[in-house]
Length: 373
Image (tube, rainbow, N blue to C red):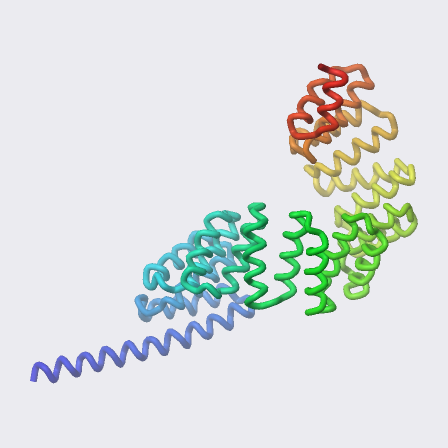
């Protein structure tokens, strides 16, 4: 009799567990749909219901809720849920992948790489983990490792984002033709991929092939007439070809689209400076600094305009602001320019050349050796 009762109890418990699993799956499905609709708080409610039914069987709910907390930038709660999921099932690759994503959110890329690697060890074809590990390596400037991951991701699933990212790595490694080839492959997959076309244009620009760069930027604008970077990048290319009117027109168009677009003011100031319209250049650079008071490029460029106007002390003041905000700005250029201005005013300048030299500027080293040693 006791054996029969025990057997019946086991059947009941097993049946309850089965019901809980089904309920958990249904609640998680509902929560997933809410996440897709970006209704994150409501999704968390559904995941929590699933966990409360049976926390030991709700690993998918912990993972889902953890990922949703991450989307809400509640990183502490996200890590807690994902650690619980890993404790419940250390063989679940997705739990490690989502945990890595939290570290990406807070820019702890080394920790993210560790978690992505655990996911990949469990599933060596886990493309999301491979791709995002490549992103982390790229952000840490470990370009060869990023290249390996992007290449593996492309083998698993060729996509525009994979080719675009690998092209960026090739650019950093100065393998320009391979970068162009990857952008072409990306465009072949999606001939309306504005990021790929813009990226290829940027490489042409870097290689001083301004005509091809303009062609690509123009293609981007045709596909997306409000793509701001395409206008300002094309403006820079026109300026290199000394087509000032076209360059000015592109800057104006970008600012018509977005009157707070800082890059638009910076680029237009460069055009005005090239046209020797210094008042207009200063007006735009002052606007930049109104919008972003700590914009180092704004101060640097305004200092350069003051240089052209032979207002050396005003230039020195702006270069000094750059140095205070970013002592290594462009590896010493603020120090070099300030040193030149000080030299013209017969102020002590050797320390500026020396500092720029220490930052790696060969030009500054030459100045220092010629005039200070």
